[in-house]
Length: 255
Image (tube, rainbow, N blue to C red; front, side, top):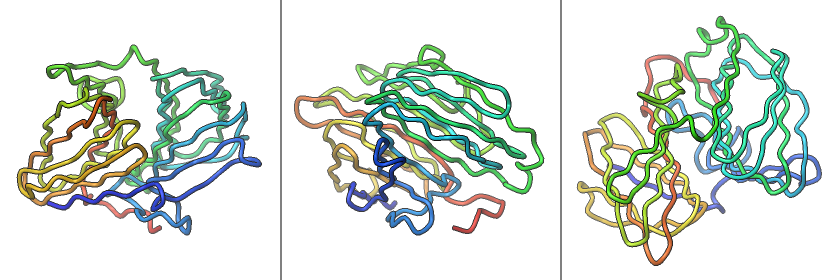
C-alpha cells in the first residue's frame, strides 16, 4: 500500500486569457511542473475557476476521453460535430474525441469545473468517430451509506461508461464520520478534496494521513485493501474520487 498527498503548491498551475480562467492541476501536462504526471491511464486533471465569463476558443482533440464535471455555475460547449449545449452545477460533458474534433468552452463568471482526461488505447481510439454527450446532475445515481452520500459518475449503472477502465464518484462525508472503500489489487484511488478537512487511513498501514481542500491524494496497492476516509471537525468532507488501474495492457502516451 502506498498513500501520497500532494498539496496545491506541488500541483501545476495554468490560466487562459489574461487570467480570466485560473487552474490548479493535480495532474498536469508535460513541463507544467506537476508533482504527478499521470496515474495509470488517468492522463490529466485540472480544477478551473472563472473570474469572469470567458470562452476558450475552438481547439482540437483526438483519441482521449475528456470529461468536464461542473462543480458550480454554468459551462457552455460548442464543437465541430454540430453540438451547442450548456450544462450546470453537477452536470457532466463527455467527449470521446476519437478521430478528432474541435470544441470551445465558455465558463460563466465564478464557475468551477474539473476537466479530466482518460487515456484509452490511442491507436485504436483514433479509428473511432468522435462523440459528445452531456448529462445533468439528476441523471446520476446517488447512494447513501448511512449519512454518507455517494454520487456515481462513471461505472456500472451510471449513464457514462468509458472505454478506459475507470470509475468515478463524488462523495460527501458528514463531519465526524467516515467512509470505508475497497481498493482492488493493481488499482489506484486518485482523489481531489473539494472542501473540508479529513484523513485517509488503510488497514494495511494503520497510519492516518491528514488532507484538506485542494489536496490531491493518490493511493495504490498490490493487494486487495480497504481505505477509510474520515471527515474532521464541524464541516463535511467532499471528495471526487477516480479509480483506475496502475498499469494497462496497451502503450500509454509518452509524456
